[in-house]
Length: 277
Image (cartoon, rainbow, N blue to C red):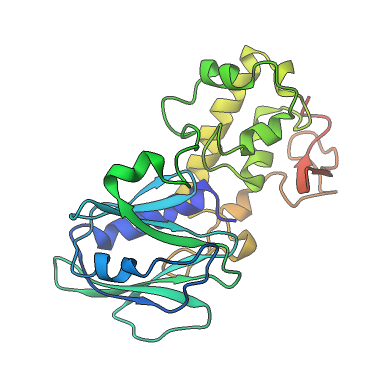
C-alpha cells in the first residue's frame, strides 16, 4: 500500500497542474472499487474548478471552488497517472478526470488500480471532519503535534509493540510497514519493544527518525516496492536507500550483524538484533 511519502509525492505532482484548473469531464469506468463510487461524482465535479491538493494520512484531498473535496485513496495497488491530453485508456483504469489549466493546457488525471482496494469520493467541505475515512485519523508525523507528550498520552499503559503503534492510523497518520521498519532501525529501537517500556529519550529518537525517513523518501519520490510509480510513470528511488526492509540475512550497515526478519501481526518486519534494543 502506498504510504505517506508516496501519497505526498502524488500530491506534489498534482499541485503542478490542478490549482485553478477547470474540470472538463469525468469518466467513471468502473464503480466497484473498495466501496461503490457515487453516481453524483460526475455531475457535481464537472465544470467545477480545483484548488491545491493536500494530503491527510494516506489520502489525497482536492478541494474545489464549489466547496467540495475530491478524496482519492490508492489502496493496495492504486496509481495516479498524469497524461498530456491523452484519450488512451489502459487496463485497470477506473476513473479519468480531464482538466484544463489556467494556461489552457489539457491533462488527463487517471486512477488505475488492478486490485481495486482504493476508493474515490466527493463530499462537502463541511463534512471533512466527519467523513468515515478521515474522522479517526491520528496526528501527522511531519507536523508540530507529533511530540513526546502526544505519544505518551496515546500509549500510556499499552503493552502493544512499538511497531504496531507506529502503524496505527488512529495514532499516527500515514506510516505503514516499510517505513515503520526503517524508522525503528534509525532510532535503534527493537520493533518488539512494548510501547509502555519506552522512555523520553526513546520517544525523542522515534520522532526524529520518523521525520528524517519520511522527508528523505519524499525527496526521492517514495519507494518502488509494490510497483509504486510516480504520476509521470517514473519509479520512486527510496528503495535504493532502504537500510533493513527486505534485507533479511544482509549485513547491517552499522555492525555487520545479519538483519533479522520476523512476522508481527501478519506483516514482515526487519531489524538488527544488535543495534536495536
